[in-house]
Image 1 (cartoon, rainbow, N blue to C red):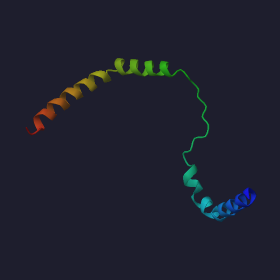
Image 2: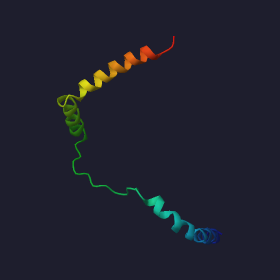
Image 3: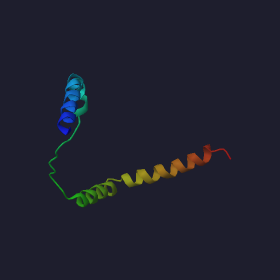
Image 4: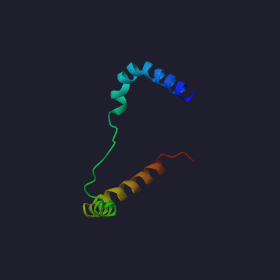
Length: 79
């Protein structure tokens, strides 16, 4: 009984084979099956990015943008 069902399933899958071949390039593009990590120190990378954020002055641009955005929101709201 199980063998007959498996054979029936195999014939159904074979009938979709041309369709699968047609769409498989779109399904597999961008699919990452394996990845080689060169620097596994995630916390160290986060600390380095944060230090760069502070040292490059981006934190000041962020804070100024928050303040100007808050003022603009207050001036443009109704009520």
